[in-house]
Amino acid sequence: MIRKVLIAEDHQSANISIQRTLEQMDVRDIDYVYYCDDALSKIKTQQKNGKSYDLLITDLSFEQDYRAVRISGGAALIAAAPPEILTAR
Image (tube, rainbow, N blue to C red; front, side):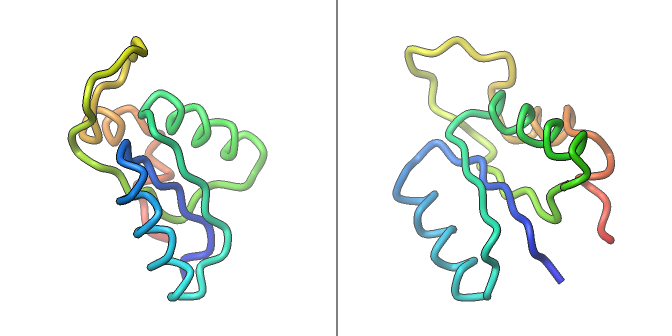
């Protein structure tokens, strides 16, 4: 069962829609970020604290804005994420 989810999506409306869909599926532990760098940081922090995510939902393309980023898209985020986040339990 999926209990803890991280959403990495740069468009607020899409982010909110995904959150609502997950809530309708009785997923209550939902984190969200607007940047892939922040997503990777949350993944690593939660993993270190023994509270890994069950699911990562990410947009594949992120629009460039004022903020400099190291990870520019969802595919790069998936590649950078620790293997544990990518493995079903």
